[in-house]
Amino acid sequence: MSISTGLEFVSDNIMPIIRSLVAKKLLENGYSQLKVAKVLGITQPAVNRYVNRNYDEMLSKIETLGISRDWVMRVVNNVVELIMNNKEYEALEYLTNTIIMELGSLRLCDAHRRLVSSLPTTCNVCSVLITGIADSVIRNMERALSIIESHPEIQSIIPRVLMNIVEAKPGALTEDDVVGVPGRIDAHGGRVIIGSKPIYGGSRHLGRLIIRCMRINPRYRSVASIRYDDRVEMALRELGIRYIKVGPHEDPSEDSVINSVVNSLGNDRELDVVVDLGGYALEPITYVFGMDSVDVALKIISIALKITQLSPNPIN
Image (cartoon, rainbow, N blue to C red):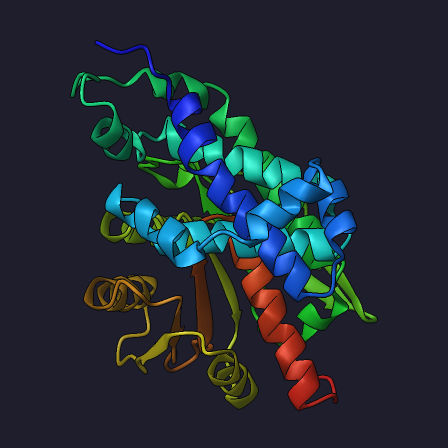
C-alpha cells in the first residue's frame, strides 16, 4: 500500500486550485498582483501563473475526483470575503479549519483513492485530525459571532424572538453536539448584542433542526434563524439565494416547523434558505443554512446589507 497522506493529497490537488481562485477573485475586486502576492505569501510571478490557469479545467478536475465544485467555491468566496474585510488572520484560520474538518470527517477519502488506488478501503487515518474538533467548532462560532457583531446592519433581520446561529460537529448525533448562543442575539442602539459565549447545547431548537437536516445533507452543519418579512424576501431574490416557503401551520408546534423545514431540504438539496411562515402565536422565521457558521454569518450579512441598500430606513 501507499503512505500518501491526506495532507499531501490536499496540498497537491485542492489547495493550488483554492489559492488560484482566491487570487483571481481578489484581482477582480481591485487588488494588484503585488498585493495579492503579499496576502497569499507568494511571489508576483506566481500570482501571474495562478491567474493564467484555466479555471474551468481545474474545477472539472476537482469534480472528476468526486469533490463538489460548490464546496470549493463556497470556501473560496468566504476566504475572499474575510480578506476584503481586513480579516486576513481569520481567513487563514477559517481555511485551515475547513480543510482539517473535511479531511478529518473522511469526506475526501474517495477522491484520494481515485488518485492512489493502493489506499485500503478501510483507511481512516485522517480521523486523527478531528481529535480537537470540539474546540475547532467553538472557535469557528466565535469567529462567526465576531463577524456578525461588527455589522450593525444585522439589526434589520433580528426577529422578535431574537436571532441565533448554531454549528454542529461533523457526525453530530444530538443537540449536545451542536454549538449555539444561550441568550441568543439581539440589537440595541445600533449595536449587535451577543447574549453570551457560544457553548455546546446552546440552542435546543436550532440544535434539533440542524441534526435532522444533517441526515439529509451532511455538508450543512450550520443554520441561523433570522426575521422574515417582504424586505427579507426581496433581498433573497435580489441576491439570487435559492429559497422556499413552508406553512403557515395549523398546528404551529416546534415539531411541525422542524418537519416542514427538513422535508423541504430533502426535496431540494440545493436550497440555502427555508422560510417558515409560522402560525397562530408563532412568528415567521427565515432559516439560513451553510457548511459552517462563518459561511452562514456571511450569508446573513449579505441579506442585511441588501435590505439596507433596498430600504435604508431601519426595521422596528
